[in-house]
Length: 324
Image (cartoon, rainbow, N blue to C red; front, side, top):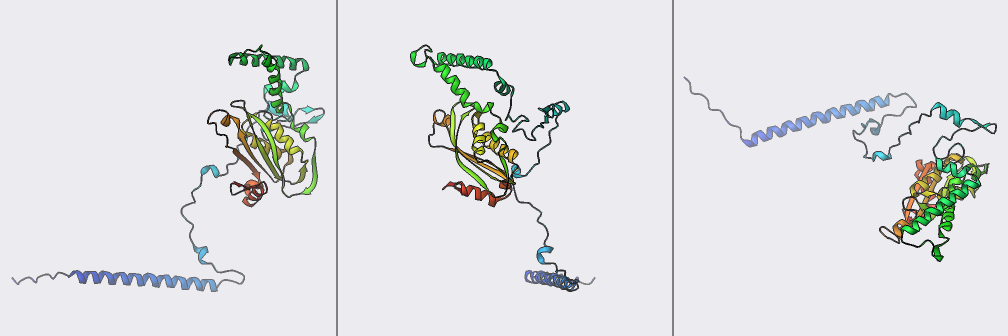
């Protein structure tokens, strides 16, 4: 049998040179293909009829497969419509003094002008003078009980009349429960054709924290952009005062004022900012005397347009999160 021819092994240098030559040929083919595609695209753009623009590289760019990360709470979710029972709808639309009064579309103001009405609110608003005397007597007895529970002598000369004084003071602190938005506005809406920003700033407010029944106080700034209809300037502080004169938290107080103005004036937008000091953080708890709390509520154009919102913040003295 003939001797077999020994198989020659390729050297490493030879195999690497073959691989590199294959890569060069592949890159040349891909470059040639891209060049032909570009030439065809240019030819297609030249054949476009008059008045049409060729497709640019940005138009040919594919959409990104990923989206910018955002907090889901920043996404707008339209509010769900609440179903109102027919009986409640008929009661709300019942004629009052010959006119049909419809219920407000938002829960801020009820159909009779009350804000956040409850059974106790209506009883206090509609009570007779005799019922008011009975209410004051019950409050006086409750305060006397508190004085006894803290270790005081309610018959001592210095605090003998304290129960009645405190009861009257508490009724004054919470007089907002007895006020009606319709009576406060009193038809002070005027069609002036004005559509520029209106701001009333540095409105001093005092309220009671509903958690500890101790005061919090500060300043509120209100701005709105009318839709040709303006409201009397004094009505804005009066509306804020009405909401402040009740048991509150600052976050809800800010939002209620903004929503009420939005509903009454139907403007393009409303912005409310409040800065206050809370005695529940100063007199007790963490006992931090230098702290202040800032809350805001922006609606309409102030919420949608950052330039409008920044203009408002600049005019009330807030820029980049710092007081000017």
